[in-house]
Length: 300
Length: 300
Image 1 (spheres, rainbow over the protein chains, first blue to last red):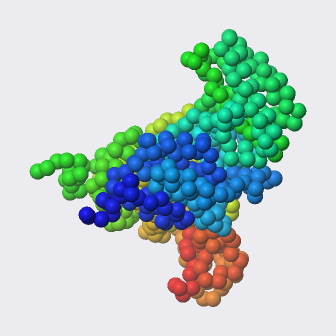
Image 2 (image 1 turned 120 degrees about the vertical axis):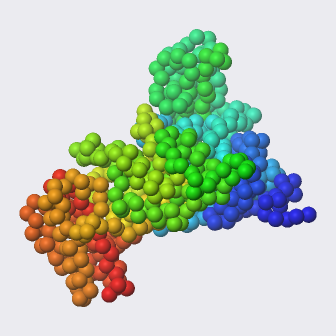
Image 3 (image 1 turned 60 degrees about the horizontal axis):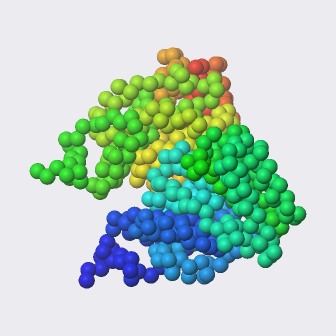
């Protein structure tokens, strides 16, 4: 059997690698590419749940070589946010990735990603980053776009996979890729939910059992809003007030925002003509939870 | 003779192409790369002079396939600057490129590079963009880094060639490439000068014959400053005042800045220990002219 670099790849027998340096991940990807493999990339902050795993499965389906990055990116956390307590469980994550047949985990060090005197940033301006989460998390999307630009430049994937749960992040990344002519496709994957309907999130683990059960109200309110829409309601204010009143039944839940916007530009929509995104962020005790649903006349 | 894509390239018989769309340049470069060619890139705003031609020659030497972009980038011009009158002479430029054996000119349309609702930018923060030209041209480097990031993503060169004349631009681009992990090398080429010593610039054409002759004082002042340095002077203020007094002999010349800085970070240097960049910008009638020289103890 010939074991040259180009023929040594055999998905069935290959062992997942955990790579911590930029040079090494570049070598691995370059070697896969030179064998004609299509590279799929799932950028994560770790603490992988079923939502992430669905992204990995989508990547497996569309690509020959799958890279998952695990990097708790400090620049997308604001002062007073949960950077320090954000869960870091690389061994557990690695086991999940390996069982799904991931080829490489890329888990870089903060000191290599952001060396001293790091000063270059990618900014997406306008409503798309300033509305919704951008209002209460100034600088968040600058951190997200910058780390994604870096990771895309390092991994050079054919396709990167993002969850629809972070609808604003998805819209911002698509805008960045298009405006800056980055040579990759962005594929959006549907929200994965717990049995109660609560959208999967690494931050759900901050909740007590009671809070976690109560938090199902978020998705229920989105579904009720969709029902109203299906029954003919088109006015955003009326649709939003349905959600507000349902969230209010949990006395400690605090609404950060409830907005109805264009799914691409995130500009506010007052009357839902054909398609709109309802996005919410709710402070639920120790966790800030986001969720969304797309209203579309096609589904009516 | 087999004429498959991979073998059809023959530098000696190929005809230079002028390409105006992103899709088409991507195809050309991708085809060259799949033949194993090393891609060199010279980004320009056209109005090519001997300085640009030296970049092209450096690219020819180091690479197998040379792309020259010609694009007067609107986002790097400020209000009241010379965007409208900047020379646009594509036919002349094309003839020069062809005679040097350039493979492809990429001359995109503004409407494709900056479509409606373009909102993504690359910013390099700090002294490196805020000092020197950054002070009098706010937003200039945001335009430069953004268009270079776009062009690098479109052309995907192995090496991009920049002139040392735009020393700050060179430092900023190197910083961006390093911080954002862009996969290309930046090669700096020496300043090319007119016979009088005046640094080559497309903006020299704005000068009258008399102004052009007078403008030789800029390089003479840099050389005199270097002589002072060689004779032992290390104090930046003394070195700078030599330049100031020589520029003052041309009564209509107005100093924008005369600075002595670290060549990498562009932070001011008060005592020249080993290596420093002296950079100047002088309003010379209708043209704002820049020039620089590197002081180094190695040369003493």
